[in-house]
Every structure is written in structure tokens, then in C-alpha cells.
Image 1 (cartoon, rainbow, N blue to C red):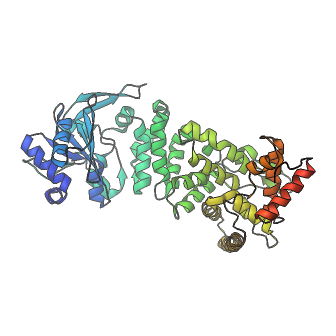
Image 2: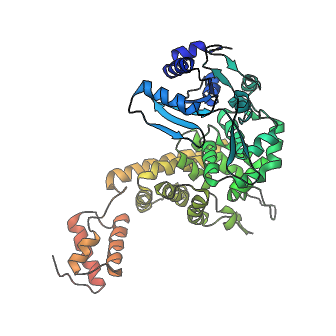
Image 3: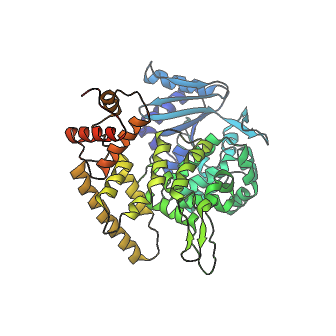
Length: 475
């Protein structure tokens, strides 16, 4: 199998091959670019392995010289690697190396090596493929472990024995599941057995590296597949015990409840069919996370999970913090959706009031569409008629929400009476009274008792202040 034509038609590969041949630096394209080329998947990342100490950095500098004198080249001399961006291509250069981890270390021991050494240290056979950029065998595919065959078989398999590959870098256990989830591949039975046996080794890996792989699983086409693999091999128990706690069904007096672990994975898949937003997917993962803590048995109604939405929202920051997920607006978005995910369900009743609709519009704000998408995904009954009925009810709710919003413009609204106006009118400094008046005005607007217009709202503020014993000092 030869890819000379691919080299000549790709401007970056063509330039690299010309430089390699002119300088005599033995060079190969390896890894994901070659894999995705064979799978006909788009890829803008090119990894180049160069034989000889310092040659990776040398080749990167020479490529940069041919592009633009202002091209920024990131060089990491300690590892013999370099990186640059060329015409929207990310090109990474490394020297061929041998790499291993001591048992309790997160940092590898790195030595110079041959192409064979470099392919041996690769995580999986499908990532150990190489294409030559050299004169003697330009374009030749070098595949020592039958990675092409594994692509055809849709199989994730390690190039060396799984124990050796996973011991060198235990994160590869998660990478195996990530690639299986992204590509829809199976994991070789020996490799999966090794993951089960070595799962506790994941504890030596930094949380930052773990969450990077976990997020890629979350973003895969059918993320439930990756989570099921994580669960059955035992890795999920170490990295996400709260999710594992959802698994199982308890029965009492002949009454059981749904398995909330598999329900959560179904909700995640449902969301993923309609959105690639990572944080909406995380909201799906965490929407029922507090059910184990709130589970109670009532002899009349069976199992209940009262308040799990509020308890779950309180759990979100701690989970994000431990997992090294961002503690910013992304976390607050997930927390909001977890807290509100039952609210639209309560609105399916025919007698629902405009006040309740206004409050949902106000509380969800710009995230209403995401919330409704999560709520639709939360319908996982195997009874198709029941699902159809729920969807129809949600359609009615959405129509009512649009009608109320068009009339009252509640989403992201701000009362015309601000805290500054209240303080100036009554001669107050920031205080409990100011907050109480603001809240009373806001609630009156949401209840439909007061229009959010200046004259009406100002008069309402004065009467509210009077009830608190306040008199205006400025008009």
C-alpha cells in the first residue's frame, strides 16, 4: 500500500518530504493522520517522527523557514519535540523514542530510538501506522502490527502485550475506550481483560489527563457505549463513583424503580442525537445524580426521589471541582439545568398558570431551549404511546411559553425599578429593605399583578416602601 499521491497532493506533506529528502533526515508521518486517512475521516493534525537526536526540532525549524519568517514554532528541547501551525494544519514533530513509566510515576523515561521502537511504544495498532517521507520508499505504508487489518475488523488492540502497553501509560486504558466509543469499534478481548485487571493503575494518572479523555467519550457519537465499557471494566468506579451509584434496581413490597444508571445513559444518547454541546451533555449525565441520596420508599406510592433536582444542583460544583472541569459559566449552566429539569414537566397540566410560565422563562433565561431539549431527552419509557403523549404535552408547553414570552418579554428581563432607584428614592444605603422591595416588585411582575412599566412600577415601589415604614426623600 503506497500513498505517494497523497503526499504530492497535500501541500504540507509534499513540503515535508522535499525537506526530508534534501536534508537526509529520516522522517515518517505516523498515528492519527494515517489512521483517519485510511478511514476516510477528516484530520488536520499531522504527527511526524524523525530518526536521530534533535532531528524532529531541526525538521520543524526548516519547515517554518519555508512558510513564513514569522511562523511561531514551539520547541520542547527536553522531549525533543516541536509544534507549529501551517495553513490550519497542526504539525507535531518528535524524535523516534522509547518511552516507559515507572510503576508509581506519571512522567515517562524517554530515550532515543528507531522507527520500530516508536511504533512499539504506540498505544494501539491502528495508531502505529506510518507513511514514509523518504526517497528510498516514499509513500510506503509501514504496518508492523496489522493495524490495517484491525481497521477492517473494527478492533482496538495493543501492538505489544496489553500488560506492557497499559503499564507504560495507564491512561491508555481510557484511550482504548475512547477510541472504541468514537469509532464504534470493539476492544480486543485480551486488551479488555488487561484493563479489568489493571484498572487501579489509573490512580497514578493526573485528573487533567483523565478528564480530557472522559470529555472525548462524552462527545462521541453514542457516548453510552463508552460509559458502559468504563463501567464493565471497572474504571468508572474510580473516576466517577457518583455515576456508578445510580446503577441497580431496589424492590420493596413488589415495587421497584427504574435503573437510573442506564436511564441516564439513555438520556445522554438522546441529547447527543440533537446537540454536540459538551455542557448540555454533562447536564444530561448529572440531571439525576442525587437520586441515590434522595431515594425513599413510601408504602402508598412506592419509590420517591423528592428534591433530587435541588440536591443534584448542589452536587455539581463539587463534582466539577474534583474532576478539574471548569468552575465558571459552564458549571453554572449545568447546575441550572440540573436544578430546573423537572420544572417543564410540571407545566404539562391544562390548568397551568401564566405566572408559572413566566417564572420558568425568567429562571431559565437564555438557556430555555437547552432545558427543553434535556427534558425531551428525559422521556425514556419503552412504551411508545406514552412517549408520544409526553412529546405532545411538551409541544403544548413550548407553544404556551412562546405566547407568554411574546406578550410579556420575561426572558432575561430586568425590572425598571433598580436597587439604585430604591436607595435614591428612600435615602437608603444597601440594606435588607432594598432587597425586600426589589424582590416584591420582581415577584409582582412575574405573578402578572404589575406591568414592568415605569409609572406603574414606581407607584408600586412607593406603596411597598410605605408598608415597611419608609418615606421618599427624593422624587
